[in-house]
Amino acid sequence: MKRTVSFRTAILVAGFAGALLTLPQLHAAPGSGVAAQPQQEDSVTGAAASRLGGKQFKDVKVSVANGVAMLTGTVELYEYKADAQKRVLHTKGVTAVRNEIQIAGANVSDQDLQKKLSEKLTYDPDAYGRIFDAITLNVADGVATLGGHAHDYVDRDSAVAIVSTTPGVRDVVDNIEVDPVSQMDNRIRLDVARAIYGFPSLNRYAIDPAKPIRIAVQNGNVELYGVVDSQVDKDTANIRANSVAGVFSVKNYIEVANQPAESQK
Image (cartoon, helix red, strand yellow):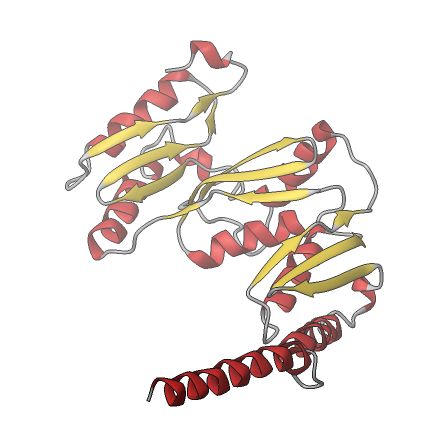
């Protein structure tokens, strides 16, 4: 009985050893998972590259490894850099994008870029005359940072598009807050506008629709922006906004022309 068990055991051990010897051959066989991985990545890379067929992407290269697409090369505008990332991210098999595309357009000083972008945002035809947007801008090392408040997503997207398509911009940081939508806030916006622009000494700020006193409202809290001619006008706007029913608080960020920032309140 013992000899029979030993004989069977020997057969099982030999069979198991034989199976182990065949494993390397099975892993290396054509069509296995290991061999297919590079082919799959090549296929995803090709699909991603096909999404960058426009002439604006002629100097852009893409490679995909482990689902992460690497973008390198150059484009003329930041808009194209952002667009390349969006296109590649929609490729099947791509789970993330590492965007290292450089902007190869003309170099523009921060001072000139700040001035140019400020004028474009101020006289944006899509936002011209809108008093319920208070979008801020800062340029440093070619990076344009947008902040402040937008009345809705359309206004925010319009501002981002203007900055993204301006030569000289190397990167865009969108910190614009879109104000919440509510019937109460909409009523307060209109009532504050009437209170300010209906006052005799303040209605002149409506003459140039691109340079008004701007009004932002978030859940009954009012913020005032813009530039006025005197401290009296700034204080009057504050008083008028506080007089509106339903207003919880007023933050007055209005600047006074030709007055040092440290002296403003």
